[in-house]
Length: 228
Image (cartoon, rainbow, N blue to C red):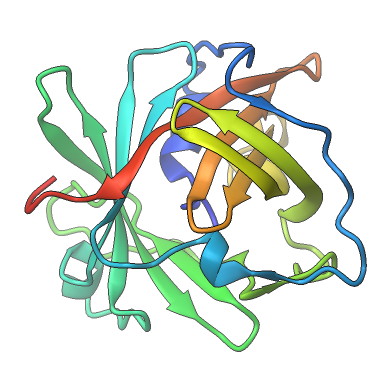
């Protein structure tokens, strides 16, 4: 599923010119190409249980983001859009005192081909009803050819990953771009790591010289409190 979320908050961070941190830790192993006969379960790579949370730190900054799977009762549901899974992905920015402000909300829809993630432009803005066009995020059956021709995403392979939240083996690596709707000069290569039963654990971004740096690192995964 695109950007865990689609990583809308990641794209905003990158395009704002925030500093990056070279990834001494988190680290990942060699990326092995996805063999033609390998099939992964997209449901495991993008868990949708209500209450599941992911807490990330933006590389090179003190910014902390919390992604939460919530019942479809936010801006998207109020806009009258049917959410096929009955859940939405809420993105919060967490302040030093622990308070959280919602900055984005994304709808998780499903098709025969896979999962579609649709984001509001800014869920925190009053009366928001406009939604971005749907984009294929995570096929339920992940193969080397699962993403259609012309998609901004493609599977780069499998790799082991080590972050502050833990270590995982044989994670799916998906290459794409941040700021897909921006001008060509503003688009930055993005590399995301999805691990079974954990979801998105690491996002790397490439600078203009082709060096990869940490954009988001998973620090904690768990269950949401009554209100984030």
